[in-house]
Image (cartoon, rainbow, N blue to C red; front, side, top):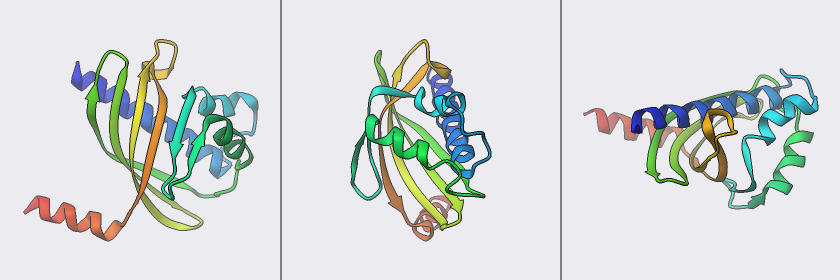
Length: 149
């Protein structure tokens, strides 16, 4: 069960970031249907702590994201190191790294996400809470080198 659940979590996280990448990069049309792929991946009670510490609720996140269509041409997002932290009957807590290459250069963030089980959602999971923290690429590279020794 844990491998299957981890795979579903990784697929949910990766698929959502493909939607984000395509929307912000302007590679997908700006239609209600394509926007719904982002909006529907989140619980109506979704909250997010940005890397800078701001708390956003779903009603603040969605309008800002919708208006950002095409704001980051060429954006590429890579997801790595998806790991399950906790699972129970209501949901899953997972962590992952998100690396973005775009007009502003390269950025990295380490994220913790609470995914609720929802049979109607893609992969059976819907985002309830996300907390992102900036990470330094050089520090991460040093940590990986140290682990490999």
